[in-house]
Length: 310
Ligand code: R5P
Image (cartoon, rainbow, N blue to C red; front, side, top):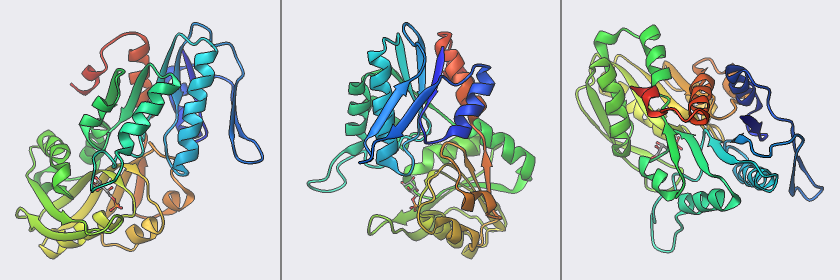
C-alpha cells in the first residue's frame, strides 16, 4: 500500500501515515511559471494499491487539479488500484439544478475524478449522501460523528442537551447525533434568498433551557451558523455550541464566529485549519486522521468499512 499526498493538507497526510505506520510516498507537486500543475511521483508504484489524499479546499480549483494530475501520473505509472481520498469533497453543494441554466458541478467533478483514473473514492460527510451515486466507482462516505460523539461526552452534560439542525436539509444528520444521546431534536427553518447569505426564519422545537448543539456538514461564511445561534438564544436556549465536519471558513467567517455568542465551534481537520482558526478562542479542531487511517487500512485489506460505524 502507498499513501501519496497533494498540497492541501500535509499535517493530516502525515498523521494518517503515522496511524498506518508507513511513510508518505515521495512525490513532488509543483507549479510552472504560469501556475500549471506539475506532478512527479518519485518512487516506484507499479502494481501498488495507492491512496491519494487531497481535499478540494481553498484554492479549490488548484487543489482539484492537483488531485486529477496526481491520479493521472499514478495511472500512467501502472498503480494497480488508485483510491482518491478526498476528506472534503468541494463542489458538493452544487448537486442539483438550483435554477434554470445552472450546472450540476458535483456530478461534473465526480466525472473528472473518475475519468482521471480513480478506481475508488473515500470521502467524509458528503453534503448529501446521494452524491455517492454521482460516481460509477465504489465510493465510501465516512462519518465524522463518532469522533464528535466522544468529544460531546467529554464536554457536555448529556441530560439537558438538544441537537439542532440549522436547516431542513440537515435533519437526517442531526437526528443521527440526537439518537446517540437520546436527546431531543430541533430544526431551524432557514430561507436563503441569495447564495452566500442566509436568513433564519423559525425555530421548530422548544429549546428553552437547553444546551443546544448545532450540527452541520459545512461552515463556510458562518452566516447559517451565527444566525441559527442567535435565533436559538432568542428562543431561550441556555447556550449554543456547534459541531461541523468541514471548516471551510471563508472570508470573515472566523471573525464572525469569534464575535458571536456561540460557546464553541468544533470542526475537524478535513481541511487544513488556518492560523486564524488555530488562534480563535471559541474554535476547536478534532482530528479525523485515525478514522481515515482505519478506513484506508480496511479498504486495502478488503475488510468492511461500514462496520467502523456500528
Ligand atoms: C448548506 O446546505 C450547508 O449544509 C451549510 O449549512 C452551508 O453551506 C453553510 O454555509 P454558510 O456558513 O456560508 O452559511
